[in-house]
Length: 169
Image (tube, rainbow, N blue to C red; front, side):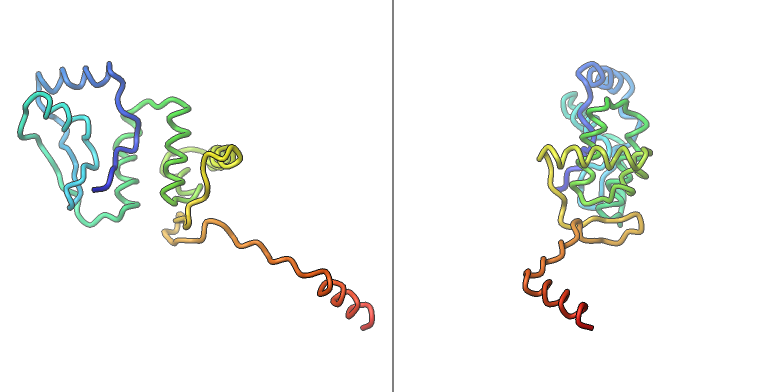
């Protein structure tokens, strides 16, 4: 099973308010699943229903979405509902980067400036918190190597021979 709980859990106060609302009015927003039964949206609603002994709740199944589309869908549904702290947003940027999304793609998804994403990732790499994923998915949907290979340094003898060849020519 894949985990699509991309945002931090609700605070205790938010959770209790949602639980009280569900106890009074039931689940008003359907829980969203993928075709494999993974919860895309509604983790807290399902947990609360289980705690309250509610057996049936409204649900929707999203079929045919790629992993990237599922991630984007989950974020589109939740980012406007949730008020994240700067630290939570920074963690989300790094989580999306670790999933192989490009900095431009992350900026587009989160509605943030590209330079903010780049600074967060550079800071985490410098601090040794993260390393680049093997591949990056760009805004064009194509996958690219996350790191470019460094040129192999030439031995000193080869470099001197090249210099000598140009001087005698």
